[in-house]
Length: 133
Image (tube, rainbow, N blue to C red; front, top):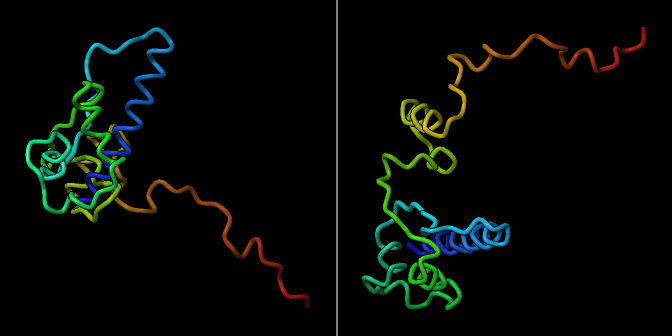
C-alpha cells in the first residue's frame, strides 16, 4: 500500500504540473485529471475515506495527493488488476494477458516467433578479426 500511495503522490505531482502548463497556455481544464490505481487501501487513504494504520509513518509531503483531490486537480479511480494495462511494465504476465495489455496500450502485436521480424544481418564473426595466417 505504501508503494502505491507514493506512486499516487508522484502521479499527482505530475498531473498538477501538466494542468498548470496547459493553463499557462490558455487551455484550462474543466475537470480533474484522472489517475488510475489498482490498490484500494491507497485510494482510501488518498481520499481520506479510511485511515490506515500503515499510513501513520508517511512523510507529510506525500499527503499532497489528498489536497489535489480536494481541490479537484486530480481524481483517483480504482482499476481492477485484471484490467490494469500498466502491469505489462511491472509484472510477469501470461501470454494472453500480455497480448491484451499491449493491444490495449495501442502498441504493436507481438510476433509469433522472436526471430520472425528480424532481417538477416551481419554476424559477430563479420566484426571479429580473423587470425593472421
